[in-house]
Amino acid sequence: MSESALNEYIPATGVTMFTTTWCGYCRNLKRMMEAEGIQYREVNIEETPGTAEIVESFNGGNQTVPTLIFPDGSAATNPLIDEVRSRLGA
Image (cartoon, rainbow, N blue to C red; front, side, top):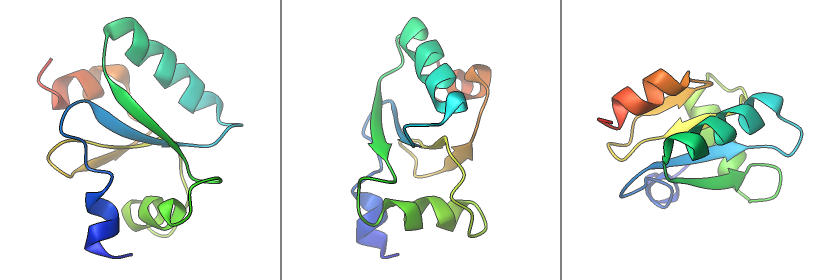
């Protein structure tokens, strides 16, 4: 994965959330973020070329979702809503 590929997904605000259509954890976290008013960009790793590799780079070679990228370029895999809020300073 190139750094420029990752940079495309580092959000200015909110989070970028890598998902799949079948992921129940993704659906739950999206619902909680919407309830909290947290902005997110959803990217399906099965439909967007190159994004599975980004997820793998954060997860020891595994395509584990949801994986979120924060404005500082850090990532969290399957975080609790409290961690998302905290890392966004909310």
